[in-house]
Amino acid sequence: MALLPRIQSPADLRRLSPDQLPALAAEIRERIIDVVATNSGHLSSNLGVVELTLALHYLFDTPHDRIIWDTSNQTYTHKLVTGRRANFQTLRQWGGVSGFAKREESPYDVFNAGHAGTGVSAAVGFVAARELSREDYKVVCVVGDGALTSGMTYEGLNQAGALQKDFLLILNDNEMSISKNVGAISSYLSRLLTGPIYTTLKEDAKAILKAIPAVGEPMLRAAKVAEESAKGLISPALLFEELGFLYVGPIDGHRFDHLLPTLENLKKLKGPVFLHVITKKGLGYPPAERDPVFFHSAPAFVRETGEPRHSSPVPSYTNIFTRTLRHLARAQSNIVGITAAMPGGTGLSGVAEEFPDRVYDVGIAEQHAVTFAAGLAAQGYKPVVAMYATFLQRAFDQILHDVCIQNLPVAFCIDRAGIVAEDGTTHHGIFDLAFLRHIPNMVVMAPKDENELQHMIKTAVDYAGPIAVRYPRGGGMGVPLDPEPRSLKIGKGEIVRNGDDVTILALGSRVAPALEAAEQLAAEGVSACVVNARFVKPLDRDLICSLAARCKWLITVEEHILQAGFGSAVLELLASEGLLGGVKVRCVGIGDEFPDQGPQALLRQHHGLDADGIARATRELLGAAPKPVQHQLSR
Image 1 (cartoon, rainbow, N blue to C red):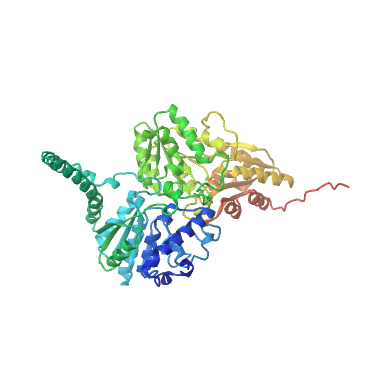
Image 2: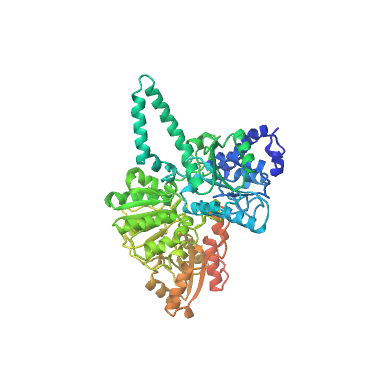
């Protein structure tokens, strides 16, 4: 009899015997694979953490005991056993179950997180709150090994070790974050094992063993094996015990006979404890085991083969970025690519195939990535920082302090700008214009299509100061590509459709629907001029002011939060030129809210960012209902 249908809460889970848990884990894997194959989602990490999640809910009194998930995209098993099994097929869909922990969704989701490296700090906050309130509950934080490249994790570890209060930190170590881990943390012991004392002793021991007839060589080989084993055991223990934690592990994260007794013992210990658990990403689904990077955030796929359900002949904006930067890097040896644990997602992995020495993945360390780029720029290189919009916001101070104050030529290529669909609230890239355009020396632009993107990347590489280009997730418009990218004139937009009644100033991805809206309006007798603004900073002052003076009715459209965005910049310009009194303006964008998850097209429609929404806003601005279209009836 199936076990999963019997689990409505962790209380039901605890009624099972330990020897039933492996069968439940197998059922959960099947359920996760089926739903993600249909809906898309984070598959590799969730398949790797099934047993650990079950063990935690089996032994801890959740939700009284608090479990905090760093990043929280590995919470599918957690959701299945905490009352969301019946709705799990709605995972990542509009109005459905979130793909991340969400406090509004369940009392078992105690902290929302979409960015890695936040878990430890949040958990230490829970620990401090418990002590201040004199309450009695356990605090458990699960972090992936990728979080160990995040500086914020060590800030949290530092305080947790100093507090010396009960706290269980579990490292889910699958030797990957999204792409393969990088950096010195993964080889911490190397500094010790290459020091003069150790190396001298080791070489002396080798010489002695080699001099022993018959048994010397076998003993030497055995010593080598022991040394390699010791590296895995000693290095993390030294690091975390120096930070004030009791280190335990590593243990096999897929064996309940390891997890359950270990966790049972750790529940009784006092003070901060660090449990090191080894897991395998994608376990139970061979395609995900073979390619955990692709299945980290997988599109909908055919379960039998692992192949994507849908493909498009139109290249994505990310593909155009890769193609263009490779082309430019062939001619300019000072171009260097930088990303923060997302070489595949940003397209830099394609550049690294041709220029492996000129692409750097710094791990989940966005702040470091930007200041690292500033250092390169100060020495004559042209760093191209490729990052998702939602992650770039983590490095705001470094952009301002280390790049823009010094007016250094760092190019920011901002992928996933705007609505990003099923990843939802924490991942929508709708704040970048606001936190970039007000910084002195910064140039900000957005392309109307993939052809213009290649020209903007060329513009960014050629520009002698800080510059950013933002572009959306997904496929392009299918327009022809010019043979060679060219630099655009900074701060110059273009009229893409002439009209006399109203001006629609559109930015980036909203130019195409603005043109569609103009067609709708034309059928109603309204003549709309459509402008591809191109630049948010500097704005095309002459073009915008001349059109405002002529038309008197103006719409701005952006796939971004309205506060401090493109529309705000236009209003500031018109105010500074004394034109606001003579022109009526309507700004179309995302209101004062965090958009939820859902398909891009649906979310754009919901926020009035599609052609119908733009046309509707224009009609409202003009204060007139659509005029009826006269049709000639045939006899």
